[in-house]
Length: 486
Image 1 (cartoon, rainbow, N blue to C red):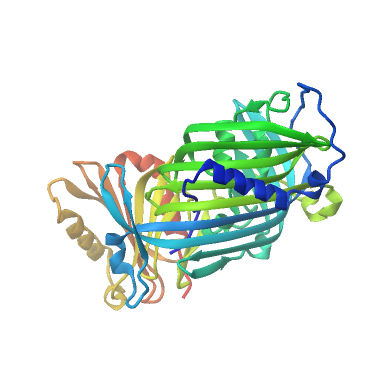
Image 2: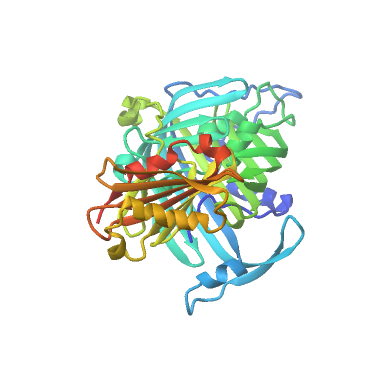
């Protein structure tokens, strides 16, 4: 199992307050802890807490995210997947949305992400109450370790991908390289809570006095907590104190929304320091507790996340390479994800909306998420007996597909097309398209054969015909870019 974008179980706000207070005392920057002698603010004195981030600004960021908790899989679904002699997982029972009880296998998970990077702002602005920020990052170090049920793995990013473009618009924060496509592990390592690029969108739009409160916009809250959709929130920020040239802001709240197509509840506490001298946020610490039910691409999750970061405005001289970097617009090709099979036998590129649901040596399952909904599936299988199918013709493949789809209902199902072509990477492709006139379902079957008998794969795409436009040509991106490596 792999931990991706895992989060937190709900706990008491009182516990959150104490956790973040400890974080602030331990990790707050020296310039905030050792501020100039306290200056007593006049009663009702107003402070302008406006972001001083401008195009060309360069920041040094040290970031850490610590995740601990558990993921849960229904025992009935998981029993046949446990290897013989494997240690039995702990059990728990949860209530589903319809009130029934389900026994779950519980697996402890943890993940530690440490990032150090310089970030150059390219542009920042706002249109129709939606912020837009572009930046280029030059990472000095990326260290990610994840552990699920005692089994650990690390994620590394090659040197040629350590300088990346970041495009933040509303709740969406997109990472991409100007030349190379990223793989999913690399994106998972970089897509973290409380991204530094959008932190200053939390600042108040009007001058505030100590004790004044203000809210957080939906886009800023979504980006802060990694929520794809925000449905309800009770959030409040307050200017709690001003020490010397440092303003201290506390925020806390409860947010309900959706992530990866399922309901998500997040309880959080945030503290950050704003420099009245540089007009920038210079430190932030956050604790979140999130509970998420299982969905189309993720299991049940109950995870606590702790984040802390230091942001130090610097000069172009501190990173000449980054200062010279130019912005590249994110094309569709640059945003593709590069997938490599577990055995390294084949690779392909796919749209970021195709998310891995199952990744095993002999079978891979992708699910297509569009605007928070699961609308299509792709199952990729190795052929059981490549020697027996190496000489298969298109007509024979069509016959096999026809028998499979007609078995359930031959009256409403039919074959729409059958084609054969050679892909740009010299892979022979058989294509058979079928549909069901009763419910509008569509199937796309593809057999891919390379130069060697062992180089055989069968793709099966399944979707409702009404979603064909959303899925578009993303199936052919997979097929057309697939290469056999051995």
